[in-house]
Amino acid sequence: MADPDDLTVRELDSLWHPLRQHRGIAANRPAQIISGEGVHLIDREGNRLLDGVAGIWCVNVGYGREELADVAREQMARLPYLPGTFVQAPAARLAGKLTAMLGYEGRVYFTNSGSEANEAAFKIARQYHAQTGSPGRFKIIARYRGYHGNTFGALAATGQAERKMLYEPLAPGFVHVDAPDPYRITHDCVDQLERAIAREGAETVAAFIMEPIIAGGGILVPPDDYLPRVREVCTYHGVLLIVDEVVTGFGRTGISFAHRRAGIEPDLLTLGKGIASGYQPLAAMVARQEIFDAFDGEAGDLRHFRHINTYGGHPVATAVALRNIEIIEREGLIHRVAKTGEALLDRLRRLEKHPHVGQVRGRGLLIGVELVESHASRQPIASDRSAAVVARCARDGVLLGRTANTTPGFDNVVIMAPPFVLSEEEADVLASTLERSIEEELTKGP
Ligand SMILES: Cc1ncc(COP(=O)(O)O)c(C=O)c1O
Image (cartoon, rainbow, N blue to C red; front, side, top):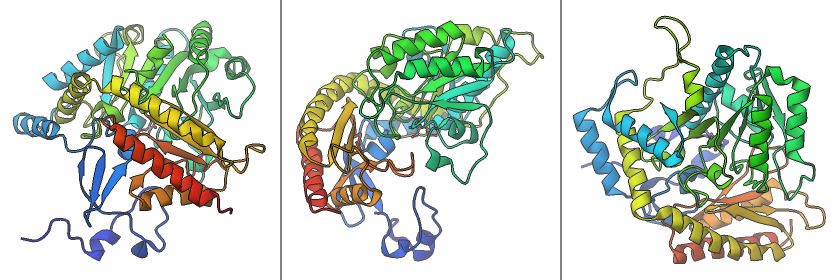
């Protein structure tokens, strides 16, 4: 029987990979991965690579969970598909589970990706205002360095110029302010938000969107009072608060949802990635009950949410997500993230003594190591040098991420976000591989 992993050059050359230049790719192809086990990916040659970024920060329960494969198979055999206009148990149970976990009344709208969850949130914010007496509120304020997805609205909300260049103009009506970055920004970002609302005219602003910790933009952790103060400002000005927990949701920062640490409730919450640990593509948007109530109307009028996606709330994806959350709870994985994350962060902070490590920061298993030319200048290290650090780790069997093509000049934050099941020994491998790589790649000079 033919080897299913045996690929022809034609097959390989038919793939358009994201985020990379293809010139010369034949001599330097991305690894062909054939399976995964725990925190490891196994390539065609049988090498075990420690996946320090859990895919794209999503394979939270780790690879090789037969249990999730069984759930998917059973659901597929019973009912493989149903539009969201009908009722099926997995989607309803998952919606109920999410509102129970969040602890407030709300409604869950399922989508396929985080980008689409944010698109749904933007549309809901605008329609909500239109239906509650403020039809002039259409602007969405977002933050520089934040990422909210690749679709025209979500990318317009994204504050990373290099993700947007050559695709612009994007959706109109998006305005940006700074996000707190205690390493680089000294002004008060909540004051700046409030000034932006005033200058735009509060009566034109529909919503403010933010990640509790900016992930792909460089692991930017705000001060503790930031989110509570943002909540206050939004409430005061009648601006809806959209919290994008596509990365931080379901335990990544050592708590079920990062906004809960601040003790606030978002008006709209977007979730993705870890909801099904990447075993199925699934995302969700949760609206507070009061928002949902504004969509009440007569049959046949236009007050309901007129938005549909073919696969939103897919029965297989929602069944898998439910079991995924059960695994997280059963195995106490969020507690484990908090514990492993703290130990890993403590250890990595020692790297701050290195002349090219400006700051090590993060929460739970979402950690960034900011590389700089020098402590004194804080100038971001050149892109090829941070790339060399990450490439060296990959050669040594550890996959890490890096900000690249986000904010111009800021290709300098190495990112770690491993699966939650990372053991102490594996955390040690992760840390020591990065330490060695920084030492060897950056000490020898540019
Ligand atoms: C914070 C955040 N929001 C939204 C998205 C978009 O999610 P997706 O890639 O599933 O569309 C991402 C993706 O990385 C993200 O990091």
